[in-house]
Length: 148
Image (tube, rainbow, N blue to C red):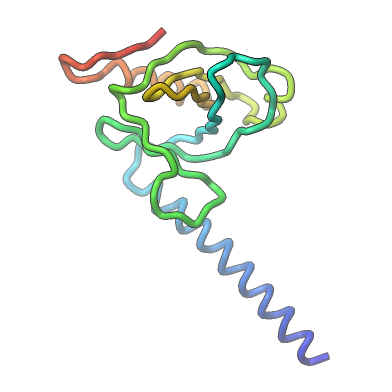
């Protein structure tokens, strides 16, 4: 009985430490500022019907001429994806359709883009979208900006 209580206490302590580390990591990511909630999905070359599958919830952070994207449910200190401003091409903006409405945040707008030839979709709030598009268009002189 005592062993079971000790194991239970240990499990609760490990879970609490894990949750604390998640919170601390997110706080460290957001510390420099310029962050926004952003879901990301890599899609194939063919534009099939949108489904709710493949979306990963994350936090994006502006860092000079790039956006660093971090998964929310990860312990990794480094970004999972880095999107350079000069390599992003916006193809389309749309609202979530079908099952996507359940997979994404309620006020999300989906931005279909290509980055270095790979097609991806970013879902963010209207306010974050306005900031993202302004950041794309604010490229230094001489850089190519592709906003549809």
